[in-house]
View 1 (cartoon, rainbow, N blue to C red):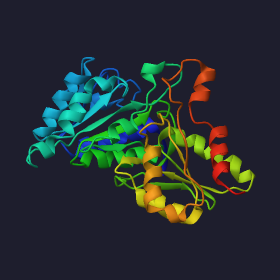
View 2: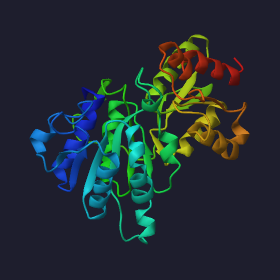
View 3: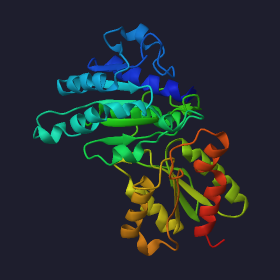
Length: 325
């Protein structure tokens, strides 16, 4: 095992796939000369050259359309957005072209493409630069949606995404690129659609994903001091969701809290709660609770940011609300 940063894990995944598969290439804003807005693609231009690591204009709809066309014609593009907030401009190509191409062509034309970049809030960047898009894209049939929370998951899932035949939305927290974690020295992949139990427990299941899972871990440590044992499930893949892993955990703990960074309406937490109501109702000893971002545009003030996001006190309160201890 070796210790790497989150950004380095992503770089290794892309570089390894580009070395073995000539159809894979990277394009996006500042990915070449500048080595990536968050230095994810550092050194890749030197290794692979300007035909496979391509700087684009700040025109998300345009270069996404070029990439979708390339994918339809046998290449395997990786599209980097400086932030998923900017990718709203490319939503037409992601949702109306990439996601629907296989069905609309009667299975004749696929679109093996990965759209990736920074997601969620990254401090005082204001409402238009601080949005989490997991539920937004998970709503669309034809897309797969992935959001890793560790360098290990980032590399293994990105390699799987690049090899996948479907269009992938790969969401990386802007505040996790410097996070460090262990990954194997050799090649490995993580299957898409498989959740991971990040912490074993017996009293309450906490379901989460992305960087906000860090708050779930902190809350679990506080609750452990009070004799409440929390199991933490990292979904990792938001579409398809590994419902079976969540249900199996509920059979053991009989209680569930879902923590996510995005808004409450039509959220992933709503989907999890609905599924448990239908397929794990007899195992639930309390209603499912959720802890989400406040139902408002994201604030700029540091004190309001703390209140808007799921935090340890809110998660602890939710767990205690479903627990008898």
